[in-house]
Image (cartoon, rainbow, N blue to C red):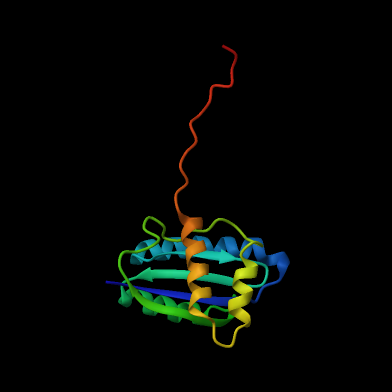
Length: 146
C-alpha cells in the first residue's frame, strides 16, 4: 500500500525570484523523489503551492518533515493524508507544467477555509491528475506540397 499527502503552502520568495526558485524546487524534488520511489505533482501559483506526494510511508514521512522545514514556503496545511492503491501519478517523480493562474481559484477556496471541504480537496486532486495525464500525440501532417 502507498500513502498520499495533499498539502497547500505559501511561497516566501518574491515574484522576481519565482521562476528560478520554482525551477530549483522542481529539479531537486524530481531527483530526490526518483531516488526514494515517490511520485506526485506540484502546482505553483503566484500565491500558493499545492502538491500531492505518494509512496511508501517510510519515504513519505521524512519527505514531509523536510517539506515542513523548507524556508521557501510557509503555512503548510495538510488537506488529506490517506492510503491509496494504485498510485495516481505513476511515471512522474514530480509532474509540473509551469506556474498556473488557472489553479489559483481552486486553491484559494481551500486556503481560505477554516475547514477545507473534502469535495473541494477531491476537485483539486482530480484537476492535478488530469494535468499530469499523458496527452495523446496528434498525428503528424506532411505540410509540404504534394
